[in-house]
Amino acid sequence: MSSSDDGGYVHDPAAFDEDGEPTESADDDDWLVNPAHPETADREFDWRGWTVVGMIVVAFIIAPTAILLWPPDVGYRFALLTLPLFPAFFLAVTAVWATTRP
Image (cartoon, rainbow, N blue to C red; front, top):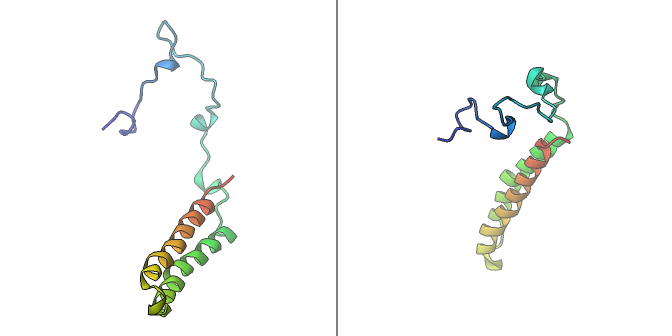
C-alpha cells in the first residue's frame, strides 16, 4: 500500500519553502474549502443516457440474435468473433462518452 492509497495526508515537498513553512498554493483551492454538493451537478438522464441504452440493446440483444441467424456456411468463426466484438467496443466508447461532461 502506498501513501496515496490510504486517503490520509500525503507529504508534498514542493508545497514547502526552505524553512519548512507552507507556501501559498497557485492552484484554485476554493473547491477544497467550499465543495459543491453532488446533487447540484447537472446529471439528468438525457439523450446521452438513451444512447447508452440503445447500445446496450444492440450489444445484448441484436448481436446475439445476429450470431444465431448467421448462415453456417458463410464463416461461423467470423460470426462468433466479430459480431460480438464491434457492439462491445462501441458500447464501451459510448459509455465513456456519455459519462464525460465538458
